[in-house]
Every structure is written in structure tokens, then in C-alpha cells.
Image: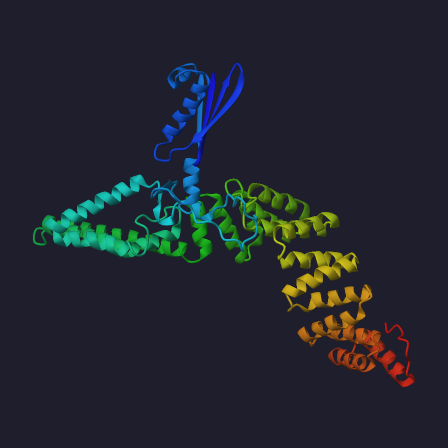
Length: 484
């Protein structure tokens, strides 16, 4: 005989399996003591068989128990005050919430995330050895304040100056983190200098110090000072720029995140040939670097490999905030390879994730326009330009798409918008002149053709348009000719 118990927030369910099959029993859960609810369920099962609960349990070969009490408590926020102990360096794991949001649209960032189960202030990292050292220093400081106030003051100085500027222990894998220790460390330096001075005063009496001993002491002092000066110069070199700082991090504590940051700085410094190799090293333990590799390959027009890297990033980090960017780059890379339908599929997928993502509408519109699918291009440009009205190029393409689909009156307004955004563009003026002519606005066509020629006197197409318009104006032509 086997038993399975599920203790829920409202009911406790018992499933009994015997030779006759499966039997279910349900009793109310007793929140003050959940065990009572379980025993009540066994009582019902035992009464059904005409025996005591103890005798029924004695016949059992297996008991499986599950409960949602803890889950319900977390979801409703009715837990005891709880701290979260995590791996050192990952205190924000509950705040980032990169595992997705159950029941919410994955990429709808207008929906707020629920609060983390444990507040950030109650998150502790596994730094027991370091904390033990700090605790010992704190205890010694308290003792010193009572027995040797001068030394105790230096210890208090260390803690008081460190507390508001940093955590007690700096991030050991970040070169720049130690800067937070400088002000606090001055107390330790003062303590060491005073201790050495007193020791030297007691050990080396000036009257008893031989010339040779004096020279040895002076040489030793100069050597120490020289070593400290050389160390300072070396550290200043490491702090010279973000590039040198991240290179130092990679040299001393190599990890994927640091290599990715170094690659970013190399790119900013114009050292493009070093970027891709460093990003490829980073992907081993930093999957996010696949996105950087994909973008770099895209920039180098290695489109097929770029798509592979971008897809690797999407597969490994499906809920990452940059997945949209990865799909967009993949769509552009597919389009560059002539895989139009696949590229359209990528941009459509983005819009399925985030329907208001204007850039995807723009990419789709450009793709349709390039392949003379003007009706679809006009539809996508209309959505894109509703969100981004300040770009002349899309307005021109939108207008051309409207012309090609027989909506000349709407095209005029789109061409006018393009001219308003780029009044010094001869191309925009010429297009508007042609649109005016098609609508039999000869005055407008003449004005824009002349303006195009004023911008570029060598514009032969604008000159031809002007000639046709002037001829029609003289003859009173009612039927438009082809002004090209």
C-alpha cells in the first residue's frame, strides 16, 4: 500500500493506492498545525476501511508528502522576515529576476515586476572568512578604545570612514574597487608609521648608531621608499584609462565578463582587430558575449556566422533584455544574405514580442520597399512614422510607396514632410515637384523644381521636370506628361 499527501493552503489531499486501485480523501488544512490535517485525512481513509489510522499507516510501504504552504506564503507575502544567503558577487540575483515573469508577457516592460521575495537589504553573500577578519578587527578596536585610546581612535577611523563609502570588504575581482579603501587605509598607514617610528627610536639610538649602521638604515629606508614609489607608478598606469583597468582585471582575474568589457574598450579605442578574439574568449563562461560576437561579425559582413552567434545568445539567454536586439541583428543579417522571408519572420517575431517596437516596423518597411512590395511597405511605414516622425528618408520611401499604390494625394503630404525635415535636399525637392505635377499643381511643381535646381544646378532630372511643367503651363495641358 502506498500513500501520497498534498498539503495545500485550503485543503489536504490524500491518495491511497492498494490492490483495489486509487482512492482520494480530502480534509481541511489546519494552518496552525498542518500535521493535524494530514492525520485527519488518514483518519477518513482508515474509517473507510474499518480500522484505526495507526493500523492503516502500518500497512504502508511508501509515503510521499508535498506541500504548497511555503509557496503560498511567498506568493502572498506572509512569510517570516527572511534573509537570503547567496554566492559572493551575486547579491542582486533576486532583484534582476532574469528567470522570467510567470503569467506576464515576457517582453512587455510596461508591466511592473513583482517585488523580490527577499529585500536587497537582507541579502547576504558568502564572505564568512572576510567577515571573521573584520569582526576580529572590530573587537580589537573596541578593546583598544578602552585601553589605548590613540590606537583605538585609528581603528575607529578605519571603520567610520569605510562604512559610508563602501561595503566592508571591496570587490576583490574589480581593480577599481580598492579605491574605496584608500581613505580608510590611511588610519592603518598612520598606525604602521607610528609603530615603526617608536620601534626605531628604541632600537637605534642616534648616539650609539655607527656610521656604517646609519648608512645601512638610510639605504634600507630609500629602498623601501623607492619600492613604494615604483608600485604607485605602476598602479597609476593601470588606472590610466578604462582600457588599462580592464586589461589588468583580465590578466589577474580572467573571466568572461571582464573579457567582454575589455573587448568593449578595445572597440572604443579603435583597435578593431583585437575585439573579436577577445569576445570569442568571453563566451566560454559569459554567454552574453555571444551577442557581442554576433554584432561584430555583422559589422564585418560575415552574416551567416553572425546569425549563428546571435541565435546562440537567444538560446542561452531567452529572457535577456537584449534578445530583441539579437533578433533585430539576425533579421538584418538574413536580409543581407537575401533570405527575405526569414528576415521578415524575425521582424514579425519581434513585433509579436513587443507590438510597439517601432524599429521592427521600420526594418520591415525597408525590406518590403527594397523588394517593391509597396502596399506592405506603406503599411509598415505608416506605423513606424507614427512613432518616429523626424526622419526624412522613411517619409520619402513612404511617399513613393503611396505613389506606387495609387494614393498620390497622400503621397504629396508625405513628400512635403520629407522636404520640411530636409529643406536643403535636392532629391526631396525634386520628388515633391513630381508629386505636385502628378496632382496637376503646376505652380507647386514649378516652385519645387526651381528650388531643386537652386540647390544643385546640375540636376538634369529637376531641369526636365521644370521644362515639362513650363510647357504645360504655356499650353494649358490638362493631361500630365511623364516628367522624367
